[in-house]
Length: 418
Image (cartoon, rainbow, N blue to C red; front, side):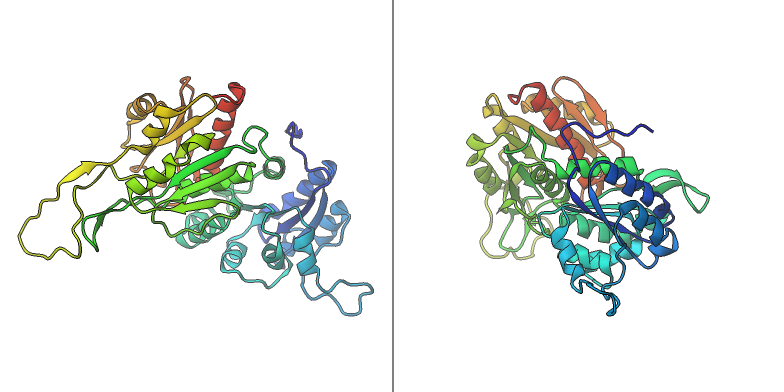
């Protein structure tokens, strides 16, 4: 494989902490360190106890030209030792890369445990520094509910968690579980450390989550949206240098670092919040699952159970995304989502046209791992010019990155005046 630095992206002069955990993929890490050093980065390696069983401390120290960090408690008889390295390292680093990341270390990071140099550095790392996590384990381990819960927690905290790749595994099986190649890890690090020149400084407005339409004081109409896709897009846009406003319905997610979050409940509240931002919006991304209808009149108090049947008259809610599309001017971009049944690609293309969008992301709730509530998604990106890109199943953070790559390409093709 021929490796070359991306234009406009560089790790030269950057200070990288590489966390190495106990997986067979650890054998790739000396090559990863060499690539980073060749690109001009400073590298310090934090090696877990289990990681030391798969790759030698001597190898990593030789290629990094730095002592390998393991315990938070250095020998007291070592001259000039820094007893607070576990704190100063988090201040020193421009980025933290964990490759390979095992299920055990991922669980410790998600729980906030700090019992070795790597986990301590994760906690003390300054909040504006990127964390890139590359899991490597058996595919069934990665797909287990506990690992998915923990990677989801880390993603919500702002970490970039990358799905393992398909290939031959140490178990002799072939499937999901391989760590990304060192060249790909460096490429992802370059992207994380370099703002997108097209999106940087742009005002991105993202709607996320469900809306609730009151029937009475205790009941409402809603849907299964968790808001994870919209929050992932907001985080990804912020990382690329955009100024991000997130309009969120009722979700159980923490507000991402550096992002303004406007919390709403109903479709009309979301529409009002969005319209107030239309004029100063460069890119509007409608990722919310807005309820199509609301009760004509919400009852005060609580409806009492009585008759065998009950009729609730509904009226149409405002179409927030279509509202932006109808008024958008040169230089403004409108992006939407279309959750359809399988084979609904034509419906998605119809929404692209009818709502005057520049890009729409089609997905279906019928495929495993796609749609509401989960941490993964399977998107098909459809552009106004007819370009269609069917993405494989990936984490919502990865899917958000792919969507923003398409947004950046569209804006760049128009000279920033989509």
